Length: 201
Image (cartoon, rainbow, N blue to C red; front, side, top):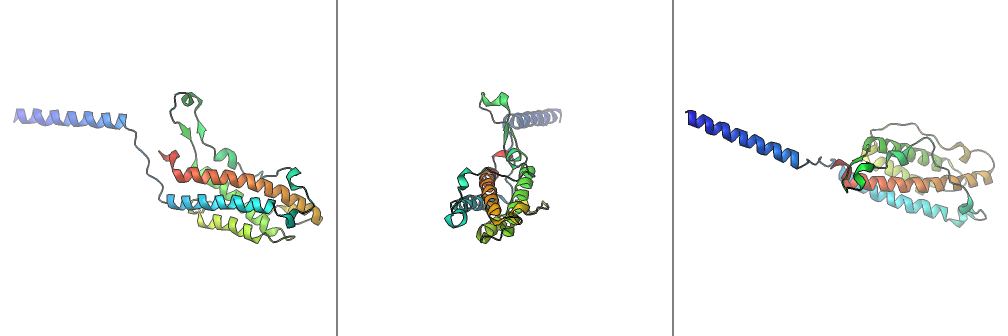
């Protein structure tokens, strides 16, 4: 009986040691989000939106006689999408080649949703031209991407797009679209990063 107890005890100690070694030597990977497929779809939709906004900026009927390229860029100042969606890499680990990034998916998605709601409302409010197609694409991105639906925010259209001289409205639309183009590029990259799931590893 004593011999059997010693054998069982030795086996338990060995098993415990092996378990500790495995857990310390092999980092566990966090499981991918259940909606990773939806995130991939959202990444594709955001890339298409980048192209659609660029087409608007190049539309001669919309900006004919107006040198849109010389106008300054105006982005939604009420969000922090660029900062929120940029993975922060520890300077001490860059040279060693190790990955040590901090990224808040929820904070990034909260800012993305606020941006999309703002630009969708602004495009829908502009009445000097038909922007419904791009506005609908923006709304579709909001509706289809489940990762952002839990956030509720209140965004209103840019007031400069609905008041004042029509020429001034058109100039301001150019500035807003240039800002939207830059912002949706950031959104597209962020959705691609989230879809890849590297921040969960």
